Image (cartoon, one colour):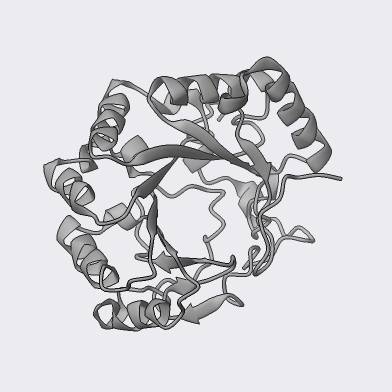
Length: 271
């Protein structure tokens, strides 16, 4: 149970505890819905819930209670989701999320991006995926060809919380993604018993950079029901982040953030 990778995926009794302040929709996805599978919390960006499927069931997932059966952008062949984005010229970035968008077959992803390509005000595509880390074989020739042919700059955000999640097969998948022309970033979540030490966070940053991935965000835990045992208090999080900044070069220090309400920036966790 002390293994930092096992702790992320092993169900435990603590998930059944009811803790005040932890809710079914901790980040306000429901209130930010624009269309089926389309969420907009921040100005200029729209998130597509491309699928509810994932390759791994992370026990701290902030969408563990999300109604995927009713809220995916793939419904009606993407038409409603694409129409919603097309109708709002302030949106210049589309984020593919889920679930995990790479759980979809590459032809399905290509079908979506072909429709998005008809929208002139889209300038960037962002993809959030855990699969290059937990299933690096998903980064195959067809996926790379699709990425290389996309008409926008692509930010590809992987999700690794601990340096031990990287190995030679992950390194090879990430190198292939870089070869397809995408910018690789890492998003981590600060988790009790996984990476809540300066040593673990420093190792994660340096190992991800060695694999060609820039540290991007270190998220404070989203307070969704069933994950309270993972929480690190804000004061401790700030102290860890300050110690990390004192130890590492600036480009290796991710921003410490907490998800907030609609149409606000995600700020550093500050007093």
